[in-house]
Length: 81
Image (cartoon, rainbow, N blue to C red; front, side, top):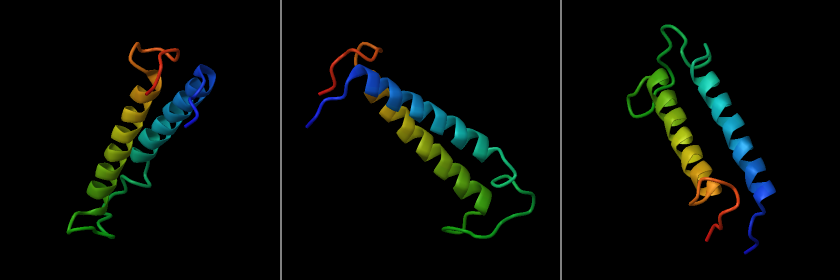
């Protein structure tokens, strides 16, 4: 498997940061937090609840990937196994 160069890892990390900011802004927008919107439900959870849970799971995955891209030393030059 091809190893990622520090420049490419930094690019992917910055992309994850941008996507994370987009998810946070989207989760506080009227698209998600609309008043009196319950439908569609999933497992009897109202729309606002399950979309917030989904946004949280996406942010957890982005955090894991960002930590993996940064490496052990907290920079972009350490090796990824």
